[in-house]
Image (cartoon, rainbow, N blue to C red):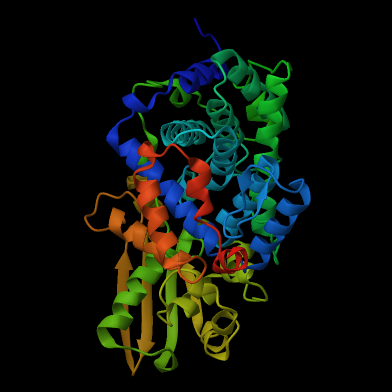
Amino acid sequence: MSTTIIEQLAEFSADTNYAELPAEVVEDTKLIILDSIGCALASTEQPKGKAGIDYGRLTGGGTGPATIIGTGDKVSVFGAAFANGELINTLDMDAILPPGHVCPYVLPGALAMAEQERANGKTLIEAVALAHEMSYRLGKAMDYLRDTKDGKVMPPEIYGYSSTVFGATAAILKVKGADANRIAHGLGLAGSIAPVQSQAAWFQHAPSSTIKYLQAGILTQAAFNAAFMSELGHRGDLILLDDRQYGFPRFIGTKRWEPAPITEALGTEWRFPAEQGYKPYPHCRILHALVDAMTEILDTHDIQPDEIEHIKAFVEGFVEQPVWLNRDVTTAHDAQFSIAHGLAVGAHRVKPGKDWMNPDLIFGESVMSLMDRVTHAVHPDYVKLLTGNAASRPAIIEITARGTTFRGERRYPRGSKAPEEGVALTVDEIIEKFRHNADGVIPAEQIERLVDGVMTLERCDDIPALMAATAPVSKIQAAA
């Protein structure tokens, strides 16, 4: 009989079986994988993505079993997972789930290991699904970015996504076929070597570090370390999640630790799909509802950027911090977080995707001059609406053009699981996002092969063959 939280998570991981997964879990898991591959393909020419690729090659040990997405390179599982984590997260367009970002941290290790072990698609689905469920439940136990107190926004002073190391480790060991005992010790090791929670400093220090809130590649390496050390006989700390004073809650600096959601109905209720979101824009989520409202206004009245006299936005209460207030945009990374610059880009109505980060656009005179005409303030009802529904990202935008002020309002950004009809992205829209991100990076035939392969992943018996479809046009031409 399991007694510790870690042991219960390990049993859950070992017992997860494709045949027992709810349909919505399987669908979201496949969409997460497809969306992540698309985000990675769109990032191969971005500086952060290139650095991830180069470091993945450097540490990959030459020819290996695992694929670096968008390159055709085969390296070690460590090198591929590092590179792919960085690529998935480069454009900040990857799928989101409490505690924030999850897939760049938990997917790459499972994907690389599935190639090495020549696992089938059902095993990969099991691993990725349990990693997201575990990460979501841990996120619900600790501080959250949008916590409020006494009617005010109270973001935590220490925050980050280090808790995803548990799901990432469990996913790797699941693919390897480890039993509950080995998984438990892997999780006990993972919590002891999790990366530091540096995100709050990243919020406060502008210009912010371009490795972002948590470098995905580093998290994947910690997960591999924990998984392999467990297999090689190391003992983990099995009470790490039960000890509030000296254990993992203290490591990550959370003031709130309510562990009941971690194990409540674990294995019988799958909770992550209810809050699994997908991002249509390569920009921090805080801007999305504003862009949704702005685009409707601009489309309806066919307003061009040079006609806009002023944009005023009412934004989320917790974003009045340097990383979002920054207007010194010198990199694509800066462009993904600046409120004023992001609205200026959105006003140009470029199709969402990698085109949003085109240097000619983000550093161009039209965007940079319009940025100077953007102001913003905190939404007056932010806390009230947020506490009413956690999916709320209340937004008001006022656009002055042609001597008239046009006003738009949203409560939920597109792509979130919200109670309003038409807010969530459809399966077809997520697939179209993938196609657009992959366009020009890999041939059209490979794009469709990936769509068909991932959306019928349960039938796949050859993950390496599926990943081969992520090779770029140049690689195929060189091999011909």
